[in-house]
Image (cartoon, rainbow, N blue to C red):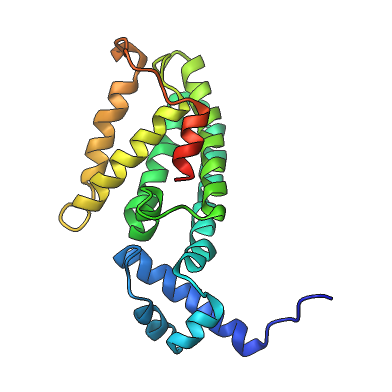
Length: 208
């Protein structure tokens, strides 16, 4: 038996809740009040729970779609004739998304367990990075020992920088990222004694 279609008024309420939640989480982070989301959507808190029984179900309805913009950014970066420029373009786009959305920044910094949909979106993002990093390494511009798994530590570090500075200095993260990227250039490289995370370690960390 098929699922009954949602009534028009229920569908409108769900759309309003998603729009309000996207705004409120972006402004205030994952700890934002669900009551505020319901109020901004113009519905009761009971209506919110009817559509999204848990806070996590609301996260999963919002953040994978927010991450999908990175698919477009990755396509543009891979089309760039300069592999280093493409790598930098995608990296800056990723952290610009973090900076404009506190909720997404909190989620990717793993302040809560990642939902299945967001884990899938993260793996897709790292797939883009695999290709961008390989191109930049093969061109001789990116240091030869930088692995895709190393990018995960950058995500955690930049997430903290963004969270601590965004209210006072919204672009401070760009300066921090610029220093980091300069350190990834092949002509600045020195041997690193600690190996990169293994694929298994990275998968386990993403699923934490």
